[in-house]
Length: 428
Ligand code: ACO
Image (cartoon, rainbow, N blue to C red):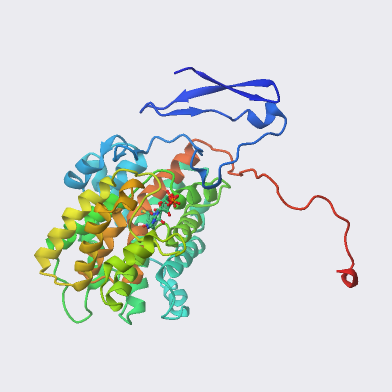
């Protein structure tokens, strides 16, 4: 591979360096493009061909179905590590020793309370509010209660902000759900593991002890690990670009939560279940919905199928499909929605439209099914995704800060009106 790329515009040749990543991915470094060509830019809506940064956190190869965090395969991490170890790995770059992990967990636990006034903010939301909107608002509001968290020039304050948010975020998640169901708010217990505590905070009945179920702990641990990072996706890019203005961690995360909310991104797991419910209500005719998905005049898409980067299979979907089967059989769940899901999956995997376009079930197709079996309401699914993605967002934000990346500010190709003189209101 040549180490330079040549671009010819109007007979003039420009040379740009070609750089290679550790996994031999190749990029043309066009940092000097606009300056040397006197104003020419690249145009790439949706950024399908544009690298926004160099990053050492997550590697994925969509063609081969590879996903690795800091070099470790997602398959090994899902099998051998727990979520907190993976969080440490993503954020600090190495798997922790037992001592490092204990300190990290102790630091997080020491911040596992939120100011009680947060309850007043939560109370002001109507019960009908979507949990993602509530979560984004509460995460942003945390800044007001932790003002030093905005000091992005101090590594110590950055560390404090990181353990604070890892301690407080599960509380916000659990409270968002409990408030919606009229349940009293709970602070959990510092004697529990990180994931066990999340389950207890979400599900503990006020009048009885919460009995931990190892199958659910294992399934949630896996789900959170699988969602923990996915390089420069929509929400992560949002976190990095928000933080690039030197905004603090909590508000950068709040921006990421908002980006994750949409049905083409994290909202897909909710959309999958809503789609399955709608198919059930309509008589369970999967063929009818397959036909709708293929009809170019119909905006309907088969939610939970297709991925911007995985064009062969989603490695996370493979792992979670196994976990979904385990959870369903261990809990003895019988659910017509799941039969519809299995039917759609089978038909899509055999249908030339989906096969030709390389549209396979993605991680969200199965995660919604597990969350439903666990008793998590559909509207909370994307919140659970955010809970898993938290360490990835933090790691990406921290990397962006430590690399002192410039403020993110894309260009545009203007296609509007050229100059026209102002028209007074009576002449319009
Ligand atoms: N159902 C039906 N057709 C689809 C679907 C789908 N789910 N996904 C893509 N297609 C078709 C498109 O219509 C297009 O067809 P064409 O070539 O005939 O025009 C072709 O497949 C390529 O689609 P694009 O939208 O160009 O693919 P892109 O990579 O931009 O989109 C995306 C990926 C947004 C995930 C898309 O597949 C989709 O909308 N899927 C459903 C939503 C979903 O499950 N999102 C979750 C993603 S995973 C995550 O965020 C963790």
